Image 1 (cartoon, helix red, strand yellow):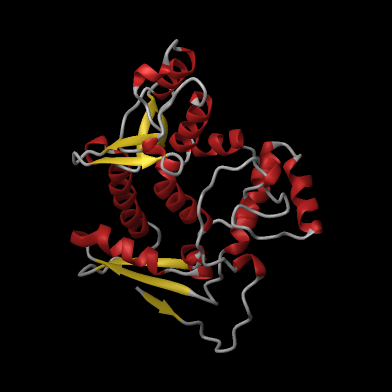
Image 2 (cartoon, rainbow, N blue to C red):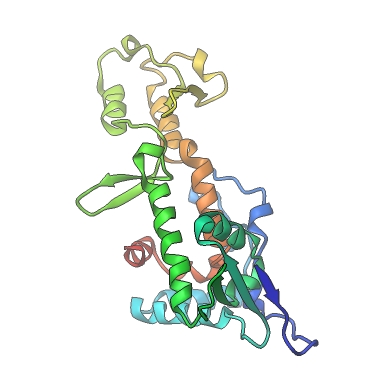
Length: 276
């Protein structure tokens, strides 16, 4: 990949909307905590926003979805760098497209992610007016989607409901979690289940891992006096703990491209609607 400098040697500093935090280097960690303990003035990345900014975002969040989405698209469009300031020339080999594209995308930092790109394949003379770019992205998206969702390779996502084609971060294991935990709460003698405060992960390569739900959990037996605490600890682990690494990678990747301030105007249903 080649970064082509602008003709004018004196560049204006990038606008504030074109400045991204270096998410990849942030020591972020997902954790389970009550919402009352979180600072409502901060984004998920811990960035504190001023009161005027929050007031504007709250006002936008109250608009109809179509108006909010139009505002979001405008903000994203404003991030795009003019060709006069910066443009990218990306050269790739068709035989090694996935590796080349991955290296190219990982090399982009900050505002360069919103620069206009022109693509060319080695040994070809086609001028990119949009068609070459599609040839570059479409196979990449297809390969990535297959890698993410292929159950044979324990991809990043696992289908949870074929009726509406819903996916969830793949924990590399299958469990009927709800029914099991319900039985733990309702059975007459939970001690007969011989449970301890630990979870067992079985991976596709046959590797088995035991994870303590609390300190020394594998040595603490579950009985009638602590089974509620066991279910709470197991629920936290199943929802967040066991998928923390892939989920954190996905969150970092998202916020590395879209500043979190632009997403706070949407509720979870609106985000789901746009993802479908």
